[in-house]
Length: 271
Image (cartoon, rainbow, N blue to C red):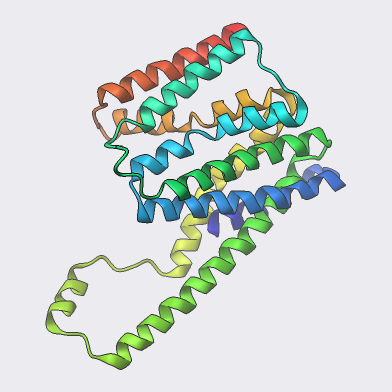
């Protein structure tokens, strides 16, 4: 909620100075906010009930959905070099995402992961549709972030009401025993809502900065290729883990990184 609230405030504030026009196409932002909420909520639920590696693999696949639907909706095609670049990057992302212990016997959470994949893909397609309709970036993003704020706020409110109901039932049933008190004392205190919201708004500054570049990218570029480059954020996370956190790469992660960079080089040379 904090991330989306920050995005709404920043988009409105910047547009107060730039004066980008509001048009009918900007209402696509509501669709973007809806499917962005669905994808993020599904991803969170998938991590809660299933294997993180499996869900992460699905979150690397939205560009495949985007390429297929862009072809069906707008007859967008990739040339030979673009197709090669797309396949190499997707292979790299799959190697990175698949580097953990996924097996056919351990597919719990796959449904939530698939729903997240579809939601992320439709969010990208909605961004492209807004660009095709000539919608300006900031009004569209304002509606997207306002929609996301309302949906995440509603989800938070419902969650709080449920937690309060559970706490009331527990308090009425029995008092906390000695072992439960000791466990609670050793556990970290949960963040208060205000602190969580402010931290989310700080993260939101990076999110809105990225989205202000994503929409012009969809306006100028091929939908599937823009989507696959956006999905390469996992590469930045791995590089951060390697050089800042000093984590070691597995062989599959190293191969995936190499494929991702080779794909970008092919895309650059093809351009």
